[in-house]
Image (cartoon, rainbow, N blue to C red; front, top):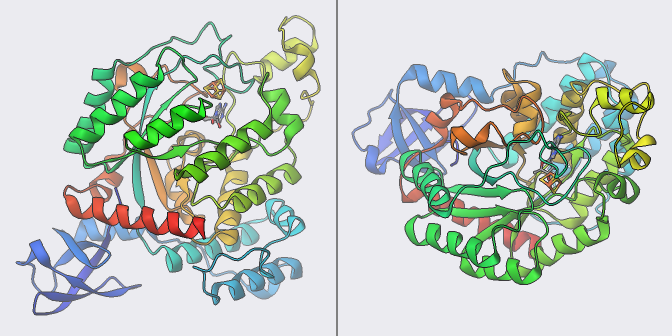
Length: 468
Ligand code: 5AD
Ligand code: SF4
C-alpha cells in the first residue's frame, strides 16, 4: 500500500530506535521487529518498524526515490523561471496545511503556461528537482501503491480517443463475473497486501446498480480494503448507494477543461455535467481523484494550464491524470487522420474530428515530457495532493516511467490487478504497460493492520482538509 522508508538503526532505547538513511533521521517503535540490532536496516512507516531488510535491499529502495540530477547553476536560469521558483519556495515556508483561496503565492495561468513550455535540460531538471524536493518535504518518502481491477471493457460511449469505444469492432470485449471480481480483490489483498483497490470499467449497463452494490458489499465484508470506483457517469442514486455500501473514493476525470474540445471528443456529452457530477461526489463525501488527459489532439498549452487550475479549484485531494496515448482503431489514430484527409476513411465522426486534424501533430512520446511537467507543476500548486503515476505514463516509458514520475513530484503508483486473460483486452490505448514490477511491490506492500490504519488516517485527514 504505502512504500515504507528504509533506515539503519543507530541506537536503541526501550524499544525505540533512532534510524537514519542519510537524508532522514527518525525515532521508530521497533514493535514486532524487536530483535533488530544496531547496524541493521529496517523498513518503517510513519514511526513504526515494518520489517527487517538487507543492506542491499535498503540501498536499492533508497535509489528508487533519490534523484540524480546534477546541481544546476541557478544563476544561469532565465529570470522569469527563477522568480517562479522563488514564489514556490516562499509558499513552502507557509503553513501548507492551510488551504487558502487566491493565496498570493498561487501560480497564475501565465506562469503555468510558461512552465509547461519550458525547454532545455537545465530548466527541466530544475523544475523536476524542485517538485521532488516539495514531495520529499511534504509527503516524505511514503509512496502509496494502489491496485486497479478493470472488470469490464464494454462501453456505451464513443470517446474519440479511447480504444474501447463502442464503435471499435476490433476490441475483444470481456466482462468479469461477480465471483471473478471478488476473487481478484481477495488475491490482491490477502496475497499481495493491497489496501486500496480501484474497480474500473467502461460505462457498461450490463452491471446494474444492484450488482455493483452487491460486489462492493461482498468485498467489504470479506476484506479490509479501501474501494475506489471508476465507472463513469452513473446516476446520483447509484453513487449514494455505493458510498453507503462501503466505497470510499471515486476516480472520475473531467478529461479536458476545454468545453468545446470535450464536446468534440466525447460525442453526446458536455463538460458541465461531468463537473457537476464531480462536485456532487465530493459533497456526498467521496474521496474524489480527478484530472485530465495531457497532450490530446486539439489541446493547447493554455488548455492544460486550465486543467491544472480546475483541479486546484475543485480542491481534489488526489489527481487522476495521464498522457494521451494514441489508440488503434480510433478516429484520432494518426493513420486514420491521413485516410480521412484523403477521404478514404469513412467515419460518422468525420465532421467532428476534421478540425482536430493538423499536419504538424506531435508524436505522442512528446506527451511524456509534457506529463512530467504537468506532475511537477501540480506539485508546485498543490504541495499535499496525491499524484499517482498512471499506467499511461509507464506505457510511454516502460523502463523508467514510474521512476521519472516520482522524481517529478508524484507519490503513488498504480498496479494492474486485472486477471491476465482479460487485461490484454483492456486496451484503452496501445502497448499498455502490463508487467508487474515486483521490485516496487516488494517494498510497497506489506501485510497487516497497521498499513490499513495508516491509510485510513490519511484519507480522513485529506477529507477534512478538502471540506475546510
Ligand atoms: N490515452 C490516454 N488515456 C486514455 N483514456 C482513455 N483513452 C485514452 C487514451 N487514448 C483515459 C481517460 C479515462 C480513463 C479511464 O482512461 O481519461 O477517463
Ligand atoms: Fe467509455 Fe471511458 Fe473509453 Fe469514453 S473513455 S469510451 S467513457 S471507457
